[in-house]
Image (tube, rainbow over all chains, first blue to last red; front, side, top):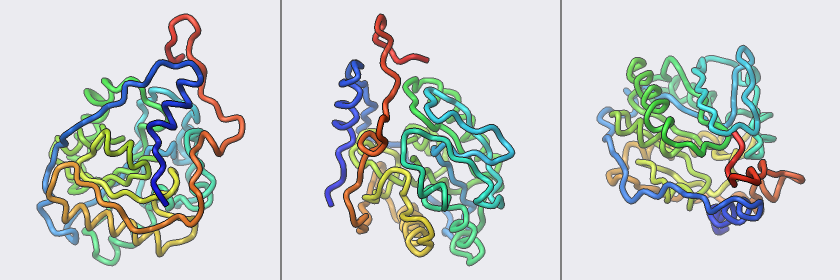
Length: 162
Length: 108
């Protein structure tokens, strides 16, 4: 099956509501940091933007816009102890098996088998909802996350948008 | 999220990005991506299908090891098996907040 063309679908939807044309970020090159260790020695972390919060924390706002909240997530948490609040994707499968969007059980298994070196001390959930104001993300919140990853000596980061 | 991947990568930490929106990902261009033609919200497949979840995670990790070109995205060979619906189609009555009638801007 051909991939969905989301750009025109989203443009049509929002312009149909009366919004001006969206100013998409379009990049022609990307930064690149080579992975220098074998996978079996890598400490791996993961970020979800799926509105996923541990039950010990307040829920996310499902229709959030420009929400800069980023939670640290205990990688040993039980997958039934999370809430999902995000109006921008179909959360039904994730609601019964978190691994479809945030595969913490699969990650733990790969660490136990030695496929990856270890799961980092903290996983992450943030940047959910719709973010229109990109400057604080690029200049403040994402760099702050990168610093935390550095503290945890993360070798590889899995980024899972929802 | 692609922007976050770029910042983290530029700070010296390699990233691997799971894409379910191929054209969206090609625009923002995270440093490395695997595209899987599944719905948004199901990048690792279906509930309780641990085998597929693991397979896709393993593909992502392998691409993190093997990618050499900045922005390189590979397409994974899995099919969802039915038509994928966008959230706009799926959720009856789904609507974003309309723009402010005066400024034309998104309410905050």
